[in-house]
Length: 497
Ligand code: UN1
Image (cartoon, rainbow, N blue to C red; front, side, top):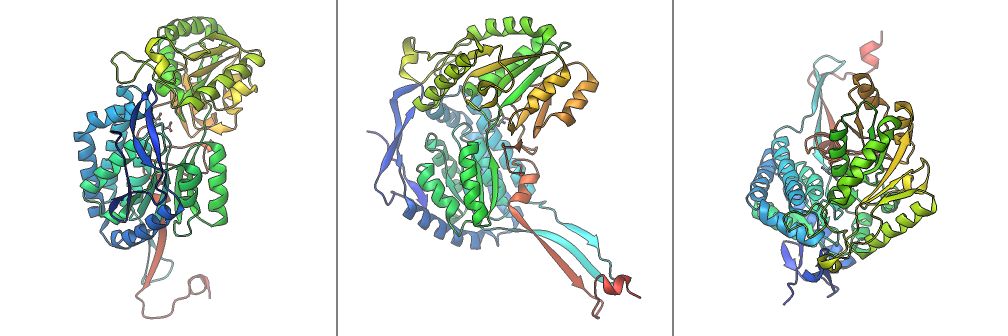
């Protein structure tokens, strides 16, 4: 019997109005069906938003420190169930257990940060230019938040978005990616168990074109947070722009690790292996370009190819697996198309380049870790996001050229520089056009308590994580209190004669 899951709408676990379901399968083994999940429709979103509006009215009046207490209990429950949740996450999206454990930990960190933020949510008190007048700002919740999330961090990304939204006093309508609905369901169960009032969270399963689009376009959803492709983000942005909604977008990346002649090559090697092939390259922060200075290029490529040949592909739940499957067959096809693009552009396929189908791997959607060398700056392989285990190596002559190549793409999430030269490290921090720059560390590995996001086509100016996201999920209210007992006219009585 295949387990049938439900939506959580208006305080109850309910079947979808459409009566339709989709199957969620293990990408390491297409025969392993995790469950049937609702293929919801517009009517389900309507009910969810109407209920969330009621939840919002209740929740906004709950003192923020008490809202934070709920998030602390969420963190405790996630911590207690970390191992079990990591296992079900690996089963539905494939990355090795060490990585899904890290993903749950990012959710725990975000929960504890949010819990404390409930006792801060600072405003400002500033002097008034008039006598006996008080001037201050504080923060108010916005309303129902629409939360649309991707498959690659099934726990961390929904928690980054929802926990700050909730601490600020908003209600959430949550649509997890259709590849990871089980993790979404478990997260909502935990939030309810922790004491979140039921109508404050709504879970609507389904596909982006239907459920995601209906949430984004709903007039009673004034704030939307989306992580996904730059192309889908543009559509979300059009709708939100037309409707004057507040929107946070986290989109594509084409992140580079730069290795200069003076770098510690062993360290740079470990960095690029983890950055490029961790999560099978399916991170917005993945290293998809390796920009290497001429003096160390050939040596680093040799070291890298040697190690990449030794990476063990497999089921992420098996000990010893280094690299899991891609998320589904279309992802494999996309990676295959880019291998063809690289070959047509004259790049040199040095290792990998094909599906991996030996033995047990035939059951899943595996692709060999792949390296192209001799990749030209400006080529499609070098410019476009692949979201798979494909690394392009670009040879440069100088640090200046490396910085220019790093900046020569339309994305700007993360970058990394390996050098022992302190001047160059500091120059890189200010000159690399990215939201995050790592020095002597890979392009992945952002921590939950710092702002996360990118410039150019990666984002739209907002940040997740850290302190900044709390500003995104609240409106600034300014309040003046005049206790002089007289009419005081700002600008006029202050500076007039
Ligand atoms: C993403 O790739 O969408 O910095 C998020 C990192 C993780 C988050 C990645 N902490 O790689």
